[in-house]
Length: 381
Image (cartoon, rainbow, N blue to C red; front, side, top):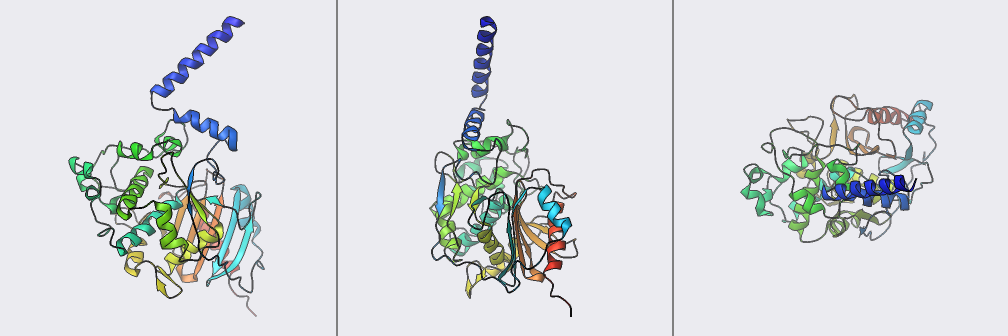
């Protein structure tokens, strides 16, 4: 028995060494973090697992509640859908007032929840701010003007900020969330995000085609940090969180070097996520002030010729009867904007098997808007 245990220990040590030498040491960090602090997979409640930078608010201003606040009864169909997909929050804002608000799984209006890839849409908002502030020339500025190493690359010298926002960067990166050796898994736990991003090669000319790649968002975050001469959390606070009178401060997870996980991981409340949607739906205008240029917001919400379901890291659906734009994050995080209804829907959750259409849009988004738009209609006499 002792020989068996010794052999097992030696084998385990050899396997661990091989994993480290192959560059997958982050897996041990992932296991340690998850065993110590909760779920064994990424979760919307990952706020305390990683270091973070604060995103301070200034003057907390809760949403005004509409006269029909929480008076509508959701259909059994949508309630079953939300239960099945492990929803943690559902919030509806109509005409600038809070109409419906519901929480599950020990969450409430003050719970900070992980945005996951909805943060990519926030990056595009910050690009608009950086252009307005003169930090960036336009979305067509070459990345090489900020990181000269890309000027030395046959493909990289053509890479622009727009390519990063529209997922047309042409990187050698396969978006994969389901196994621990994927680049996405490494990205979530790696201690040096910049080192990982800068080491990803190109396989084709930027602008050639659409392919969703989280490394593009991480590089965009690095571009923004260098352009605005400050960290992303501070810039987000100054340009958005404080001017919008967000109700709660937020947090943005970082690597061990203090670099924000730009591809994900802004931890905020459902109420404050809704404000982001309302701002963009209003073309960057808030309480009489133009926080982001109207022209940029319209470009941000315009689908690309290469993929009519995708804009500047914001998703689009113009094929449904009710046309929408939405921020979309892993495990079913949504900020849905419905301009013709002057409505914003926020839904957060824990479910990673949502059905999608042929353009990779989650079908749940249509279910939500088709159901919730009906409950908000005034009753007929």
